[in-house]
Image (cartoon, rainbow, N blue to C red; front, side, top):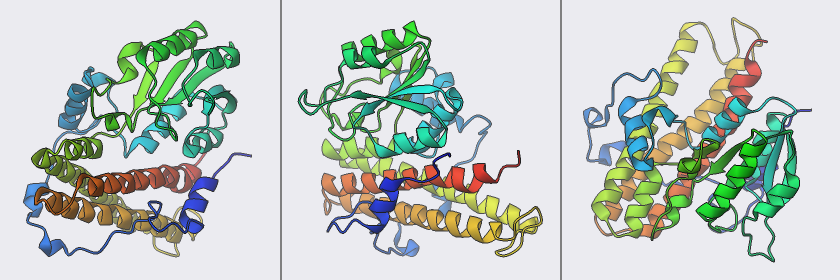
Amino acid sequence: MRQRHSDYMLWAKTRSGAKFNLATSGVASFPLHGLPLTIEQLEINGDSTYGYSPLQHAIARKCGVNPDCVVAAAGTSMANHLAMATLLDPGDEVLLEQPTYELLTSTLLYLGATIKRFARSEESQYALNPEEVRRAITSKTKLIVLTNLHNPSSVQAPDSTLREIGDLARSVGARVLVDEVYLDAVYVNTPRPSFRLGPEFIVTSSLTILIALKAAQNEDRARAFRWTIITAVLGLMFTALHMREWLDLIGKGVRTFSNPWGAPMFGATFFAITGLHMAHVVGGVIALVAVGLFYKAGQYSAKHVEILALYWHFVDLVWMFVVPLVYLMNMKR
């Protein structure tokens, strides 16, 4: 049976009693009228047939790649889901590091992949060892999934090691998916994306909030503020598109307890789940602007920006589970 839930997310949202719990929003209310901006200043329009072109080109310049190689997504977790869904069919063999980020495991199980583990042991300080991959790989392997920096240990994998794993993948016709969401947390001599190491590499990451975080760590308050606001603007764009979808469904007759196409409870489920997520996005946007302003004014430190970045990634992560639950599971076969 296909896995449709994450034990980690259930624990994080219902069981964690930590004093500082980054699995919940914890975002204080902030009035919109207190923001020194107008809606005109936040407006972004333009062709978005295959993504918003200025954003695609900005990401390409930042990563040093061709814009045609860039796909924008609603956060790294959603990018991971899209990459895996594109590359894999049910039953395909995937090599996954152990330990790893739980949502990578949950996503692979949801997609019906056959998971084989290779170790990143505590005794080796969680170093990525190509020999472990060599022992696990077979002619049936379709994908090797890594995190760099390693999640949860934060160990960085050198390019030489990644190239060796790329060679192993190429020998059996497999791809290497590298989640690099925390790579920019290497503030000195930040490594370049592993995408450049070979055509078998696929890289996922988060752009704007990590740029803001890196600028904050470097005490570049103006740049940190600028990228924090850009992240907020992208959040507003996401919210606006979601509201447009709501209005379209309402116009077609979908209500809380009625649905012209099928199950009456679809409306209640859809509006409740997506509405709750949208509230977290809006809360995050308000927090982004507030923290950005306070940091620029010198009242907040880089640590506040880092905590905000973790919350923003949490919102991305939740959306990855909303998509299959609300959209994919309701598609007609």
